[in-house]
Length: 482
Ligand code: UDP
Image (cartoon, rainbow, N blue to C red; front, top):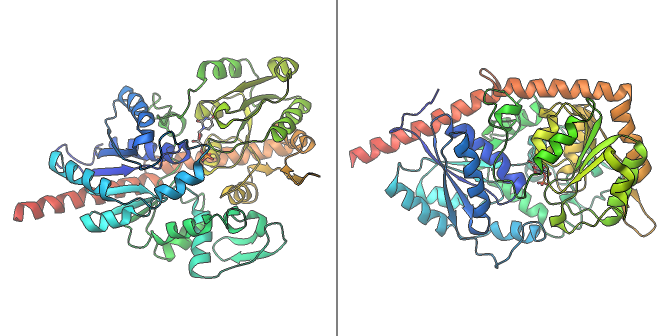
């Protein structure tokens, strides 16, 4: 039931970071708020605005109304989020907030006043806009609570410097337990450390101070220790996950099957038809997210590993990232046992009964999507927060295996074909795999419970809506007094 009436609704401005792994959960959160009667204005950057307008079409079909606005990005023309990802991240970190401020002034004049700004943590400058305009702010953190707790611990409790990524050193983080160096976010080590990525991530943690909410795409049961740690440290954590379209989670709205705003054309029919022809739990779905560029050498190792595992596979190879082909004649060799697409409808694929395992880079969204679909994972973490996500997925949730990477003679580090073959067989064909699936299904049920009436995330979203609506009433009474 809508919490706000048409005239007394809260008006939330949502500022998304222009990359699929950031916009997807934010769009879902916006949909959840809009369906509770909150007025949403979703703001994107100019270069990415067309993608958000595509999302509008999806939302209109669902009868969800969200307003779309854009602000200038001040980036050079022709910028590409995939090939220039670090450049875009570091530039959007520092832009001056006057465009957003102007937009909010305009929105205040034309519509109900803005009562809250929800913004991606990677844009900490929004805090100044919120302070200046006296509008409460909600930081939307797109990584896990565990990762947030690690950075928080490092920033405020204990520093570890000059540690080597591949050493056996261990840090003990009370909220989480022992973390080996290779399981920490790779940002603690060169080259990402030297590129300034640790500083960026610590600034995000700093931006939690003074925020009214820190929104996490997680749920209390999933990361209870890290979430408790953050709450005890006075971080106003508001867990709202899993942020997954309704058709794949609470199943209340069977039409809600997409986030909207997909960066590339989804090859839906092809994937679904092919999956329909395969037996239950027989397919390995392989995807490394929207940014990672996989070397040709690594593609070949994956190709050979999948081929020699003799299992079915659906593999996303994004041509947009300039990724090479597997090898000449690969498609003919694998015949109907494998399907390669450029971009998949990932949620539909993961929730298809034929899918038996998810070979993933363990980006946070993919991890949440995999567990919410109850699919065991083959963790091929590459960088950023992925090693930590992978560790938790394997050791805490016990719903997958981690693949080992090997240093080659030329210095490259790759997942080798025989490791891939071995792990695919372990998850798809063995009793151990069945146990992993059972655990994954447990997390799927927990994710569903958290978002249904009475669940932790459901209650948090309702509380958030009540609080922003209360602020709206406060604003109106102040205006009446003037
Ligand atoms: N995704 C998709 N189709 C694909 C591959 C990925 O829709 O073929 C979506 C996926 O569902 C997820 C996002 O892209 O929501 C990737 O986010 P994640 O955090 O996993 O990784 P990132 O792209 O940020 O590395």
